Length: 192
Image 1 (cartoon, one colour):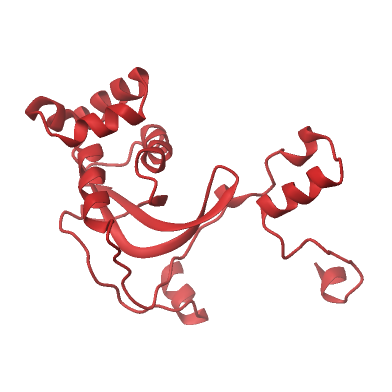
Image 2 (cartoon, helix red, strand yellow):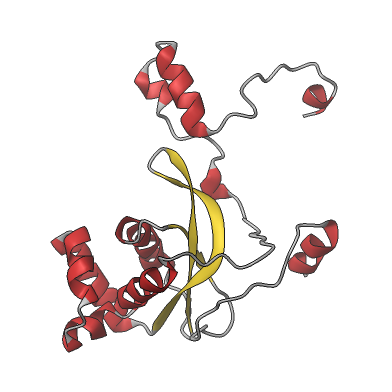
């Protein structure tokens, strides 16, 4: 880093995103195993602080929130014949449906759509979509939540990020935001 800060290291691709670097790599004829390897440290190894100036609610907000709620309560929705179950079944394999039945039948889970847009990655492309927030009064079961976090954006294409809400379970819908900007003071408060 110190060499980079002194201008001794040239990084012509530092401002490119993963998908842009891959396009460039392919055009240069770099072998695919190098072009498509997982970047290190990569986006999965970071703590994200999501900030927003104002709520973002598009035409698809209500429908996406309803489908998200159906995913979180899939077991109950299958039992009661909820119409959104068919949409979820059309987007998932039998094995994934069995996972949803098992997991949502064993935990009281809440899933809400946050009224914010976040940059994320779907496939190899950068997208700007909603954030889904999962919470429960029970302790998180990370192995199952990781599977669920991968399923949600495949079912709801207007969601590209899934977060866990620590603390009390969030049961009511959120339609506004507190304008937040990332500052040293905000980061210090979060570290406490």
